[in-house]
Image (cartoon, rainbow, N blue to C red; front, side, top):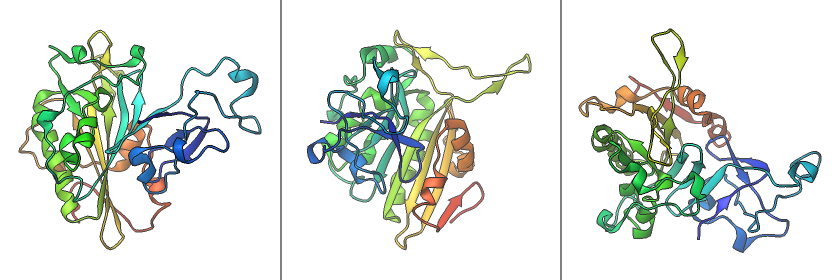
Length: 301
């Protein structure tokens, strides 16, 4: 059973997704360890969750004491499943980011998409949960962040990608064409790399309006007001057979995109995604290796 993970102490996610949060009682181990992909990602500590929702006591002025007498209203919400790790954004009713580990084994198998159904993630509080009704007649597809076809090795792993916490409203033309091409490209990279770590998420980018000022504007759909991203990103971290690390980062607008446009046209400096998303990738990658090669538009490996 996957768990929500929350805490008062931040831990760095190995290849740089800013801060994750862990919370556990002293002496807990084994049975309370985080399940799924989170426990297998490089550098990431095994995270334990306090099953009763209590806050750990942190020495020297940390969370606890009188300030937390009646609890704190929220923490970053993580879900670790066999096929991905997800950080949920309750305000947007979708994920902030989703991380997958792809290799030749995960993208091969006999799992069938037809055996999967989109469904609510009932571990999300009902106030913050998307439903299938929110998407009905909205004009948007239920777009996967962790792609179903990335996890053909296990029917359960594929089924887990259909939780609506792993879904965001996506323009149908984008979802079925250019974005699908990018997902296929991610899978093709497993032929030449030991592992392909894929981090996918939404962006809500500002634009200049007629009054000359910049605004962040986005639509919401359904009675639960599921936020429609203006753009989507993918950051690919490639582990080469020789130990080198290669970084590729892409951004696409959440609008119709000509599928004939080469994918390299959507390459962007990872710093632009870090600034726009509030996440960090490079600092933590550099804790693991000094052999980092970033691929940007016009620069091929």
